Image 1: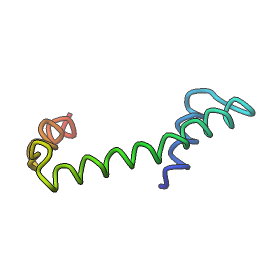
Image 2: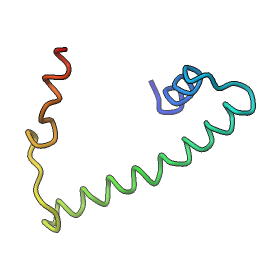
Image 3: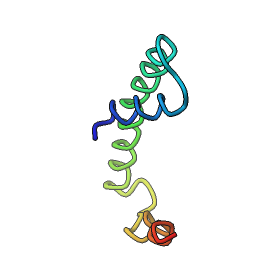
Length: 69
């Protein structure tokens, strides 16, 4: 499922429709690029050791347990 489809379904589930749905969709979509740019910037900082190293375990700590619930 693509981002746009996930966003639309989430907004519909929140009860938005018509022009409200359209407005909230535009707002949500406009936040994707800045979020991705921030993720890429952090990845670059980690890659050149300007930031603390994060292991696979650091990133996923506790996630597996939440899936089992």
